Length: 371
Image (tube, rainbow, N blue to C red; front, side):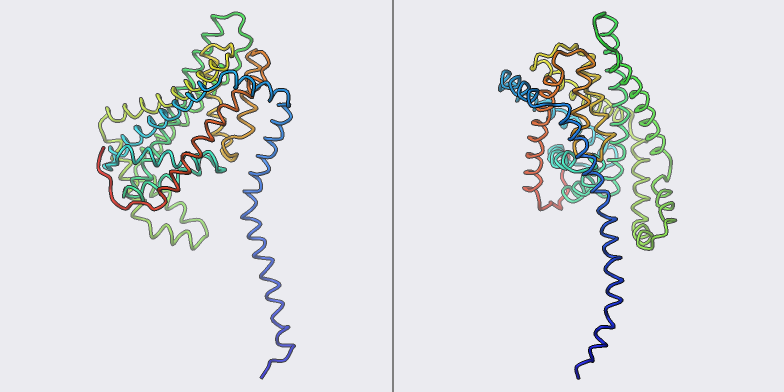
């Protein structure tokens, strides 16, 4: 028998209650993305107010005047990624995981596209690194997570050393050149060097503590979420293995740990050499010290504004303003040319990394032999 019309209408109130709740949940999930897009829009709007059409035309003319030699700026990025992979491979070896250098380089290049494209930058890239390392090479997830935590600590610490080198060199240029307009980059780089060094040492102090991952898991279990508590309970052994992996690294030979520091410090210096190369190609009248300070501060700023994809707008405007503070003639056009070359280089590596990520879409489950 067909139910009366009143019975059908009685179902409406529950439905009316459920739909708004689902909508509110979707809205809450979309708010972080909307906030990032808003910040990106504001940064790009600010950059557009700084750079006018005539500045862009002059910048493009400057780039055309240099021509094909600007393609050489792709090499330092490749070398820097190679040094990053070398340090990462040394850490994995100290943990007892044997992974080919080429496999790590391909993985690093693939993740570079995600780091540059996605809001969250390197923060969003770390989970992708761990997942790809496990799927493509057979490395255990605890080893992958421990290696990435150690890599991050080394990168922060060596960034502090790089900032200190840049600050010292920039101060030397200021003292030797009385006509140098400002010591601002040197002073900011010195402050940032102290901050990054302290953060790096703090990360190592945390990683050295026995049972850090296990204590973190117990702390997370206090969060009132049954799903999270079940997820942590299923992976209790993995947290213990992460602790064991970190302990194994700190008990490894000092020579290995020293080689890791050298690899990551050289990576930062090579990135500074890239900026120096671009500045020289464009004919900007800057000594090495301020160039290194400018590059180091630009890299640090990208970490600080990680929620903006590739630091778009924020990093670009900062480079232009630093050139103006350093007394570079026509700083907006010169800075725009510098930014365009750097962004074109990033676009090349994004395309390369994305193509490699798509080509290697089906992960290998076999463990790679040591290279």
